[in-house]
Amino acid sequence: MTGNSAWNQRGDGVLMNTYGRLPVTMVRGSGCLLYDADGREYLDFVAGIAVCNLGHCHPAVTAAITEQAGQLVHVSNLYHTTPQIELAETLCAHSFAERVFFCNSGAEANEAAIKLARKASPAGKYEIISLAGSFHGRTLATVAATGQSKFHEGFEPLPRGFIHAPFGDIAALESLIGPATCAVLCEPLQGEGGVRPLAQEYLRAIRELCDRHKLLLIFDEVQVGMGRTGTLLAHEQLGVVPDMLTLAKGLGNGLPIGALLARDALAAAFTPGSHASTFGGNPVACRAAGAVLQIMLAPDFLPMVRARGRYLAARLGELAARFPAKAAEVRGMGLIQGLVLREEFRAEGPAIVRQLFEQGLLLNFAGNTALRFLPPLVVSEEEIDRAVALVADALA
Ligand SMILES: *Cc1c(COP(=O)(O)O)cnc(C)c1O
Image (tube, rainbow, N blue to C red; front, side, top):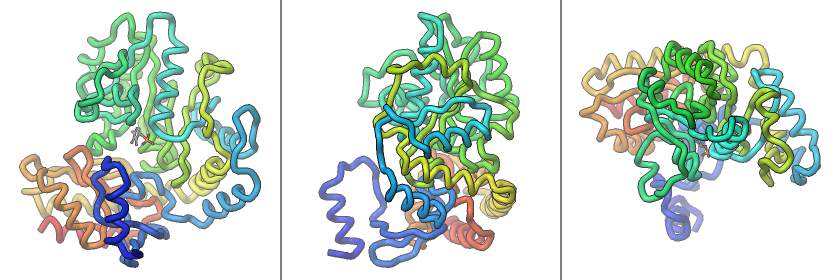
């Protein structure tokens, strides 16, 4: 019982069937490569869905985790720990924020943002407007905030106070603002929604609306933060600053950690007892995130991500030009890129992902729309070439 198929069978026998997993059991990773229980190698352009941004088992992150695990693994948030303080200082030094709340996932970071938005707003203001096509997590409140009905079905009644504006329509968004509205929540680029960027003018108009109607603007950068787009935070490239920002996926390079960032004046609405998390800001997870930031903030790292992002986008552009009947466009920022399939070809998306998996390339199909390319940020041009060649074969 050591091979892939035996493990798959055991897993399928005991795990809840929530994921539609491919028939593989992964056992080891290094850089952009993964290995299954039969020793088969895969080129990983999923990276744990934008989690392992420095690649699998980055030596500096592994060393930080290992050292911290021998020193202090957990204490309650009734006490300070050095890794948590250092990480919060680094996040604040490199963003608009002055305060951080740590939790364990993206959904929890968004829950914290929703709670802070309500707590900081005048009585009677609780409603949050998010966008059609958005994804904000799987807890009940974040499912309610998510603007895709397929995530709602079967879970009603959902918590009240969430409405969705049509994507890209600023007038429609303004018409939804009422006396109970307290915030707008959006991703600068929708990841799960099919790698769909929000135009800079649209984001600026949302900021302007929020200012005019005294609403808080929350950016969910759970997927696009942490270097993914070529800047530490995606909004840095868009000239729009939010009031709150959430992070998770890439923050710990695989250790579970989420964060809510805000300025002092807003964060002051949380007082002792307002909100909490037993594991939030765990020393081991914080040390991992500290190691991640140290690498990403070195002078050459983010320029390299931008260069590789341009390279990937250019190669995908060539691919789209070669298969105009199947590929509609390439869109994205930095190293989150989507090859949008033509509507009449979208039903083939899952089969293409499956075929690429069999060829040793891991990719996924986001929002039933786009083949999503999320390589580790340390990907080489040669690895990009290899992935693009395999996708070309699959489209041919
Ligand atoms: C993945 C994701 C979440 C949810 O994160 P979890 O860690 O799975 O709870 C929230 N928002 C966005 C934009 C995401 O991509």
